[in-house]
Image 1 (cartoon, one colour):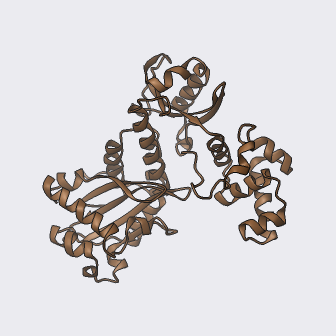
Image 2 (cartoon, helix red, strand yellow):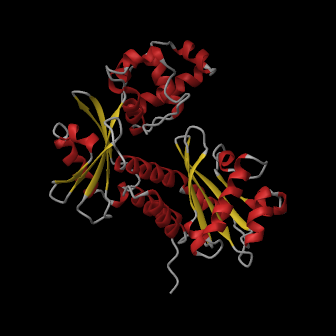
Image 3 (cartoon, helix red, strand yellow):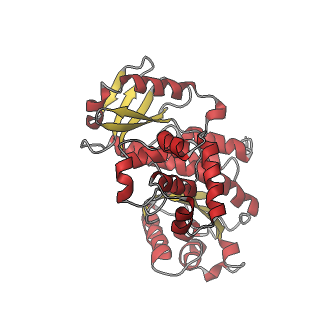
Length: 372
């Protein structure tokens, strides 16, 4: 029986719920692929994680290419080497790094080669000989940072990918990026071996601790109330909240800690897994600004306001017109619900962060605008 096709909005909601479960990376990719097929037909997918700073590939998940018979395990290893070559050693179209720089981070091979796929080294050496000549690629971006990418393949007896297919993948790029970031965060917590790593706590349906890693133990007592609160919130979310993150920043005697909640057993499970990350002042500020829907440019301006710069000085620093700066400040005030610069600084910037403002660049430059 053919599965019912989904609209893209439903796909986005389903992927957002999946991403919040904090699944191990390869399981997240496998379940994402299953859901993606409810909108886009394909033979197989191959998933990758990317370093958000350098956009270098950091892992691959070619299980579907093997399971579908496109490659045997040894062939999959050789295919991985060919993919690396097409990314970093030869000029080729639709590299993941280049897709990550585009407004729409999705590319179809036939379009990129103007109907002559043999122009692509990846096609000549890998896709054509393997019988999967039709390729759609995407990078998964959220707040300007690339967390992963995918290769989606169709066999030669299947139709090529369409603009509709590309638009559907583009529409869920940010949702998938958030899911990858959550999976990586929880994977790091599962492997935590020292106090500087993220901690992990699993609460059962009665909010009793089932599991706690060493980095979380020292924080457990002081964070008992917010842990239960964020766990209860994660269990009670409605469908309309599916795309909002379960995260909260909590003050402690040793600094701010960010809690990220996930439902490892799915929507109806009573267990909740919570990652605890010690947050620097910059991270907490970024999280707070993102919660208000502030853009990366507005975050830069908010930081410069906290440094005491005037509108003309900000315009000069960022190479903007004074009118553009004023428009950004007006938007900042509206989003954060304040009426003055003083209120903005008081609401957004913490005492522990303010002394550091003179030491580094504004949020949004260099390391990026992210709470991750």
